[in-house]
Length: 283
Length: 283
Image (cartoon, rainbow over all chains, first blue to last red; front, side, top):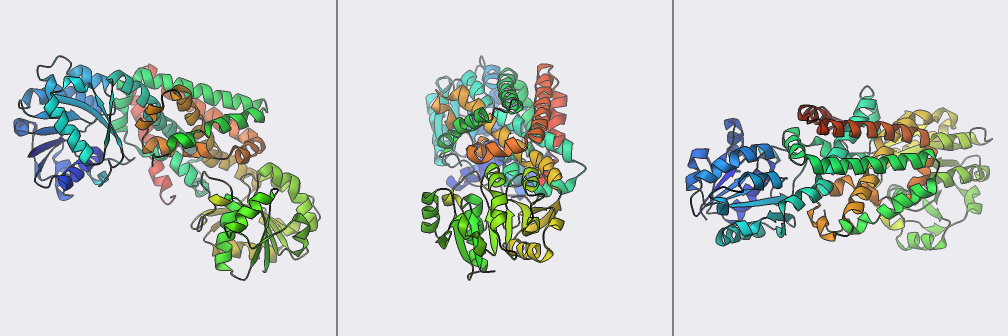
């Protein structure tokens, strides 16, 4: 592997570039972005070696797409049109069903691998890229049987070499479960932030009272709307289902409080403490 | 100041003991707890110098009460009965109105100072005590005018010396605002944990998909129900109000998704990104 093209050089693409370059110093990382200013920033930060454009993709051994998922669905078929027979296109999107569907009947489907490296922070853009972001994290790979064996093997070797463990999952199952363990967290956090800001916006001093618990719970409300709106759109039905269940649980908790049923409130919390065991191993 | 009695030697009491001992090596820290096993643990961890009982309080220069807030309301009047004229009782509870009310007409009200050091983690008990927990954190002091000047001065000097900044607030205002910036976060986190556990409890592999975002958002769901049930009970009206507003905001978000109004979804998130500025400085 010699030439890797990163379409999108933000938090995910940029962090991948750092770790890949570290493991494979001879690889040339080419950056592609809608905006030249983003590429200039990525160059200045040493995330990429060279600027490139979509027309150069025929020279790629591997293309990694890390852009908003609506843009991926639009762009992926034409990227796959351009890839050479020995090249591989992978995407790192947070949804998988729509992305897999958009190339389902593409003549070069076997040159594509769908994945979701589950790693990130609440920051975005090239300056958010950090070393070691993927160490110990899970990479969900979808429809692996639809990719040329040798090509998927090469890709998974690369992702394992930067510290990821691989899990295989159907794209529809991925979208259903990720709605619970990732998408819902983002909405709960955004709406928590909104609720507090709406109430306290004229009383800035109040935020002196906010401790590390609040900071942790609203951290995801700093996330990029440009990235997250298309995710919620593509995963609409699953996300609505999680939201409905979450609202039912919150309403039930509120009703228990109104009824002064604090024994039940205690039990609700006690049984959820079990999350301790579940979270062991997630940093 | 020579003898400090800690009623409660868990996360807050234990962490205070560590930092006070470090700043004032000559102070003798006496531990009081319902359970002897807790005191033995605190001794073994070097959080306290000696075990004591409520009968010893007449010898205290300062008593710091860090126990569940319902227990504080029950115990505080009798502790104040026992304190010497030159001794001070402070409490570190997460609610302030009921605690201030329970000693409002106490003949020794001037020997009591109500405070809420806003610091903590999701862990509890003596083993959760850590050094430096209070550095850079806010200590809310209520009804300072009701405490003997010299005694409050001594207490605030102590809390400043371990790194805290002091803010003054009416107990009713404290309970209203803390419901937004602390109590609501805990419920949003507990119910997020519950929603995901209910859905995924038979599919443990799914938690491989949970990333650091989920971990951060449900961190507070590890908190102690013994500590939090009485807080929600004492602050019932304020907490119900915050929950109602939170549920309205979540329902609105869900309705926007159902209507495919993703421009509005984008705007909701964009305007909440403002939380970045607010959170600056909170670790």
